[in-house]
Length: 429
Image (cartoon, rainbow, N blue to C red; front, side, top):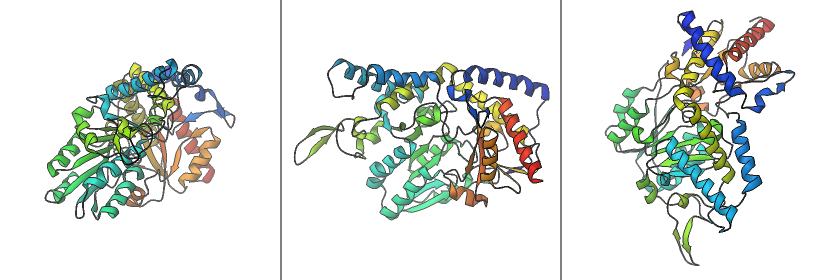
């Protein structure tokens, strides 16, 4: 962890880069109606995109257009608007497949969120493949969504749940994999990017370690898919999960990518309407993938909204999204680190972290920081961020977290820093 971090950079170069960030952020902000509102009489500063992103008008209009012009259930009706709805729903699946470079749309399953996607893997793959005495491996930096399912699975199957730790800079201790080379590791579940430390993990290397152990890989990409290019064929992971609402899409829509071979072998997570090919009173034949895993009426509006979000991000370019995030994070580290009494968590290099900074201000609880900032019109997250074991590992109960996205600009970071200084002065810290 880095305390009173100093990011050293030529000031003129940094200013040029910040001008570029300001230009992109300002142009994009026009598309986000919520950013025009006031909170407690002050301009709204939204720094909680790691929890959920705001939505551009293009996504809002896509959902509105669905409900106004072709609202119908999919895969069932043979009338015109039902066929339009089905086509839009499946086109969304194809866009997701291209977005992460899956081999086929058949490898894309719509879920409610990344949490449900990971639970699907736990139930449909884990319960049929993990046995007593096997090892389920994960890390000490996981969100509860990529921890609790494996706790349940280990108890159900009598497997051992083991962890890869992280060092004082927030990087995984890769040497700890040596302990598991001769053990029966069936599954390795890990986060692409930590929602607390910000650490971007070496995913290809981690997948390689897992393959050497004979384990399948489950990657939580909730904090990565919105912020950087992802190529699942290049990474070669077995499963990857992310949520639409963290990447400009609506809530209630998530994605599970799975290799086609594995999905074909797996039993469905839930059963009911839509996911059967045929049924009689005594038995049923499951539908083909991916529909085998999509029981009941799906979130059609969510898929359509997510497709619009992907279109929006790809017009910007995911490389540009990532550059914007790196520069803004670097600026945040530089500005906030000038303050006395702040402790940061995670890597010191903005290139090695996603767009968030978790911190504590000496002498004041994170919840109090968040409440004070709300009075200034600034929204941040405070608490354990659904990662209690990680915070316990750090020896803290909670942290404050500022997280950024494409619509944020440097002046909002300045306002955050000034407001934090105001807190310190008010409390005489």
